[in-house]
Image 1: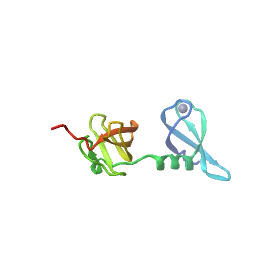
Image 2: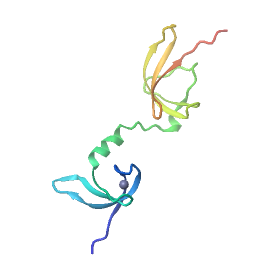
Image 3: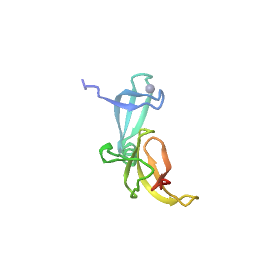
Image 4: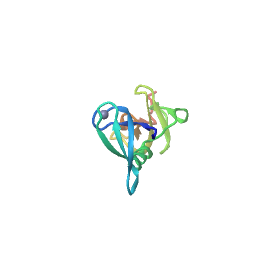
Length: 125
Ligand SMILES: [Zn+2]
C-alpha cells in the first residue's frame, strides 16, 4: 500500500487553491506531475519548472526597505518605495521630466503595476 501524497495547488478547473492528490510524475519530464483536484476531481498536469519561473518574476520587496512615498522627496532608480494611500510597495524603474518641467518617477508597484509619480516637488513658498 503506497501512501497518498497531497500538495496544495491552483486548480485550473475550479480556479481555487485546493488540496491536490499527486497521481504521478510524467515519464521523461521530471518537472511535470499529474494532480487530481480533491474538489472537482479533475486531473491536471502541473509543470513545476514553469511555476518556479513565475515565482522568480514576482518582485519581492521588503516593507522594511521601503521609503515612504512623498512627492517632495527624490528617489534613486532601483529604490523601493511604499505608497501609503494605496498600501502598495514598488521599485523605481526610471525617471522623466513632466510636461510642466517637474520631475517624475516610474514605479512598478506590486499591486497597481506601473505608475508615474511626482518627485522632487518644489512647494511654492
Ligand atoms: Zn478543481
